[in-house]
Image 1 (tube, rainbow, N blue to C red):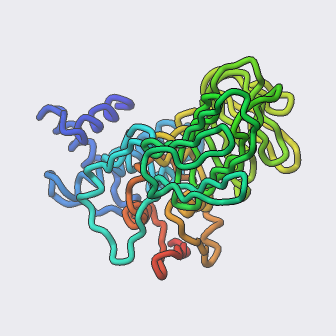
Image 2: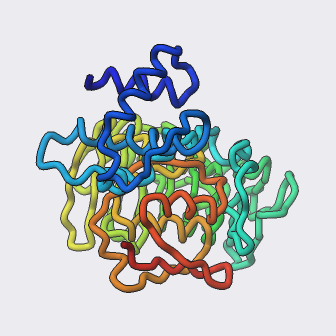
Image 3: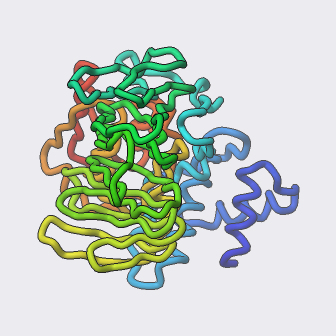
Length: 378
């Protein structure tokens, strides 16, 4: 039946199937060997248990049809697909950039654990040239600082700079702790989004022959075109913008600094990227360029987590930065060979995310509200 049954199942899960199509889906469901996926079969064909089983079977069916090589037991496909179950379960949430994000209705319908952890939110610390700090989380709109002839303003969770004439540049640093994210407009009009646990150091005016900033963590840039080159210094490498839009993931606990080009072109080392390409630069000074799904790199800007065939340790590192929790792996649980793919909204609480992961045989314990312990699986 191939892709036809996949389409029918998707219609079934969306509530758009006709009576005849619904019966085809249920017939397919009854014909599957349920014993190998450890999901009991019952006679309930309304909302409830069967929907969860059909969702799981759909994900396994898709995985099995995409991989022509040696097949694992069917229940393993559910674990390998992991968070991809969220798609069929309706957890996928598309939103505007985080400065204007709204809570999805689904989050309010879910129970919240006694020791739950709220998701991250807008917030940052602005360090001025004299070393003084402005905590931006609760400041009101308006001018928040003046440095020489440059005024720094805040409007709707976004910082911007306005320099008068040839203002002498001094350096500021915008930093986001874990559990925070922010955006700013640089003096040249370039827009920058900062993910959690990140920083950007930049001049309050670009008066030299080039525009240079330094960053840590993860940032997305929409560079304002001009006659001066725009360069990003990160982890010993310089990224030169030759276009407009790119994302840089440079967390020090990740294996490589990854630059993803969305539009235009950038140069990383001696490699010039074209849209849809990604350059991974390792601490050993090697660089690898490959094509990629840019929506994965851009998901955090649009209010989503997006994972594509990542190990459990990488997935949990991402959660730790956003929910500001410490992580401990017990009993070799970090060595899980399973790969996780899928996406969900970043406005969910930590317990809501963890409950979803338990359906993929990920076991955990949350201690004191800020320590996530990943336990050995089955």
